[in-house]
Length: 327
Image 1 (cartoon, rainbow, N blue to C red):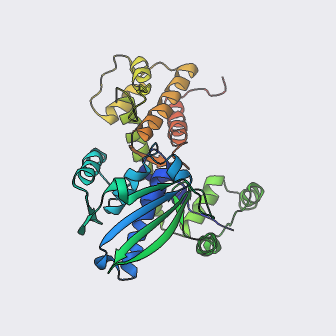
Image 2: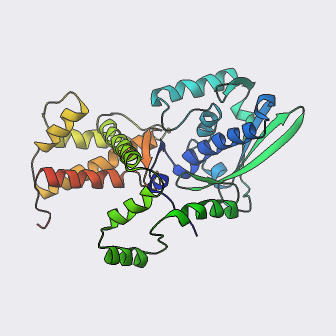
Image 3: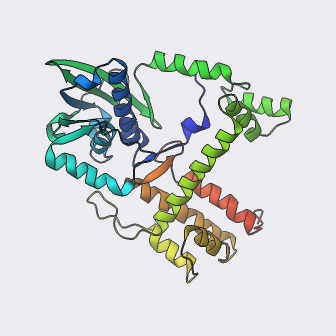
């Protein structure tokens, strides 16, 4: 039985996939931490990564190999400058060297040291094995990316770790009916019950800070998606649609900054159908940023990353425009 924080569900990271991009990236980070905890990191002479099952079959399309390389450099998907990703990858590919955790240079050729194996490991379809060579001996560690950016080594260990968190919650919830009962008995809304659980893990100041960071990331993502023209990467020449939709919706409204952009949206035509077009535009803009290895909020997966931001913007627009949602 597992119970997780909203900040486990809403993760900031790089697209396009929570299980095939963000998960492997985090697995690389965890492996580095594991090597350090075992006092092996400084002695590593060579590294290789084997990707199995689904990570192998769709890994190229989901940039799994790129995520692995970025994770091995010690870059954090929450803070890495997105504009620097291409140059980091190109440097590794051209020089056949990697700055392991930004601490030591190691020979690394992605073409031979990241191996795509179509066979499946027993526990999960998204398996990967990291191997470090030390004094001529190989030390391997297996991880699984189980979706939503979650990474585990063994299901049992993961469950026990989360059970400790579960026991700290004042309102442990395993099904919707329990949540409904808590709301009735405590005379609280769903958000208030969730907040009480979160307060058992961190202070209200920390909660507010993290929620604002998530919301600002969503806003930035929508803004970038609405203002980026051209084709999506990947070789299929898929044209970005959010740019054109946004251009039609915003019209000639003047603005120079993201905040002024929001103010301009407020002044657009207040009609229900128009608002729905905006919502679709917001969702599409996030999806396109996600597909282009941009920074998004996993909500709760990268595949659905556009839904929550667009719904939140819908609520915001309906309130500030005093839109009658009953019509």
